[in-house]
Image (cartoon, rainbow, N blue to C red):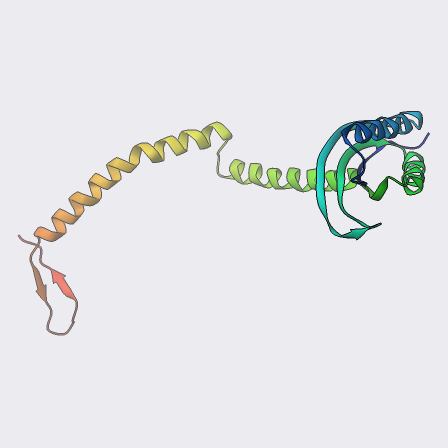
Length: 173
């Protein structure tokens, strides 16, 4: 048996189908998938929407997204049956497990870099939280120190050096 993969199936049904017809069509699709060794993980009915362009003299259609796990042979048969059905205006089957694997790999690599940087600084996740708390706690103290420094500088008399345009602060003895 071939390897099980993950696929997204999106199909647009004719607007002539009511909600019961859409549910019945979904049960037909799920039977086909189960008979061919797959399973439907999730189904998301997007409802009736306006099409970007006219398809088979229809301006609207019912969109349905299904996440399917199964072998590649199942997808070929499912594609063939959807192509033959007159109620299906458009459909597409996309393999998504490879994209999900790549995204997970990038996410893991990025997290590894963050962990290495934190370890190089001697930080762990709890140490980072404690450091953030220290920064927040010391913020009022640093503001008070800055105000005192301003008062000291403001109270010292200034004189201008003849050779320089910048004022110099005199230090009293």
